[in-house]
Image 1 (cartoon, rainbow, N blue to C red):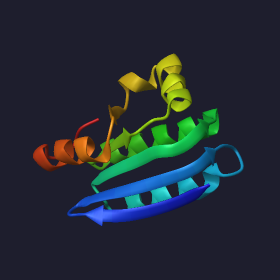
Image 2 (image 1 turned 180 degrees about the vertical axis):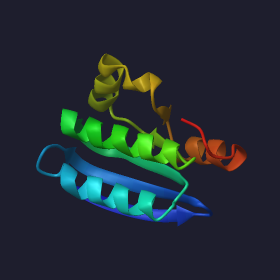
Image 3 (image 1 turned 60 degrees about the horizontal axis):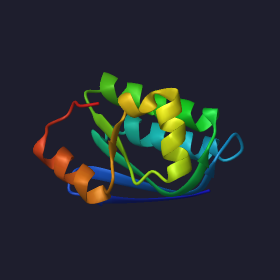
Image 4 (image 1 turned 45 degrees about the vertical axis):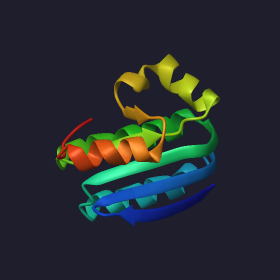
Length: 118
């Protein structure tokens, strides 16, 4: 798994590539915790290049969302591939997270809405 990040104004975009599973999820967990503890209020996670996510990966994303809410921040997910999108639907997490088809759509939402949101 690879993780890249960029800032667009006050929004951090984290792009993840590869599989998010038991072995690789520790890197994502560490990166998200570092950014949340650093008080980044608006985070977008781009999953366009993620073709698999395990229950451990889901738990990490859910924990990050809860921490962001606690800090009056927001966290959105974008560009879910069909398998990953199906996992979110089956688990009901598509109703917990804000999901957007593109980074631009999520950015527009975050730029026009002050934190907190989902």
